[in-house]
Amino acid sequence: MKRVLKRIHTYFYRYSVAFFFILVWPILYFLSRKQSRYKYINRFRRFIIVCSTTISGIFFNIDYEEPVDWKRTYIICSNHTSNLDVSTISIAAKNNHAFIGKEELLSNMVLGFFFRTIDITVNRDSKISSFRAFKLAAEKLKEGISVVIFPEATIPTKYPPKLHSFKNGAFRLAIELKIPILPVTSIDTWKVLWNTGSEYGSKPGFCNIFVHKPVETANLTLDDADALRDRIHNIINQKLV
Image (cartoon, rainbow, N blue to C red; front, side):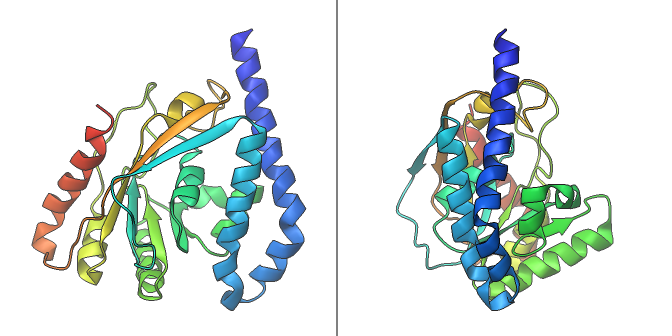
């Protein structure tokens, strides 16, 4: 019975996302017609997230290690255990930002819209696609748009999820452009909704998020990329232990 209720909750949450997306679709369509309007799209993404999670009984506790200067541009790196991770970062990050995600998300009615406009898709099995994605990410960073990267590259397939090793791309990019990294730990989002929710369902509850202080890269070289990767991994993992 408990599993049935959790599956019902998952469907309710999904349909609530679709409902609020359709509700603001005319505005989103207008904004998507010109790239100069893209900077406003994130505001409506937050609106959809807040409305759909609230009506589903999902709430976020976000703690900051120190006040974040949202006038700066960051590469935001987070662990990845749930489809809610996009929601948590969209709420926690107060500046304009873009996500890097797998190209399969283009087929999703809601996520597909954002990945065709403000976000970046990548085929992680293609080196050419990865190169193009990080080139586009670099362009956005130079324009002052923060980029959100999940350096595990995928949601862990085992339950409960454990932090996987990180890929190097985000850290090389941060060093090349001298962009600070903002680590974010999603502590227990998976307990509310793991992965897509298709296997274990979801439930109302609180997701606890910790935003760490930025890690500067101005004095680093590409030779430091591995050490930077391991440092960010350890920072995030310490909150999960």
